Image (cartoon, rainbow, N blue to C red; front, side, top):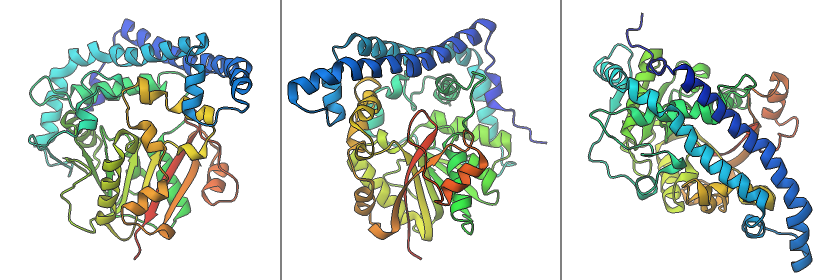
Length: 395
């Protein structure tokens, strides 16, 4: 029996806290669906015709849509509600995390001192935080991922874990999606049935949400996760220990990793690169190529490039650039994924992009057909599909 308690289970909301979290989840769903639909109607009926009348054409970029719509009342209501709801997500779990923090630190300490689960945790207190993490509370989360306010702190990891449930609507009964890693790992097993990675690395792993599911599909693989945020890594390590998952976490900047060349069969990330500057993205992709074994593969889930969606959807996605403390969002999406990968040393013929459905929101038959290229993939949007880019290192 595994002696490490489940650190997630320690956060036990009161009746009122749970009610508040459910309200925030429902509020976000209302904003992102109902109010967003009203905003789209306002754009189609008022904003776009006015732009067409003035310029003789429709807006052709997200920036032009933003400039045209920013004085519209429906947009301003939507934007204000969305911003405030984002802050409410983190605040709705803060008190329960603070209440249980000493016990969570104790469990993380126990996991760090135990070797029974096979995993490891390596922290670097001298690691310099990159500017794109250190200068902003990304996602409007106070303290961002790396903030520490107590010795051996895990609070930011816990807030990210439980606030993430509120953000994603996981408290609501209608949830059907499974998430990025469950979808990508399943897609890999169908698309490349002979690919059996022995060592898997996730860059920007935070609390392990998008690393652990690879263990379900590739149970013989060793898992590695790197991140700059010590509180998230402590939390992730405790989670892995309680689940008996063989995972090794280390505090590193993905731009310059200490693993030797040809270390990994598979390198993955989820919602990671749009938080980096373009310069940092290119350095990280070069590291991926260095670390991949011949015949190894990288698969990164990200937001779709601006060139792949229309002007309105670019405006909708890039709201986070101005209002969610993600200043590299638009710059990343303006890049061509193949150009980014070739700048990191990959050959163009070894690079690819893909759009896949969420494995939990699609029927098994449809998911397999998309994975095999037998039917077109779904459009991107509302977490029903995932945009991927990746490459294979020649054997």
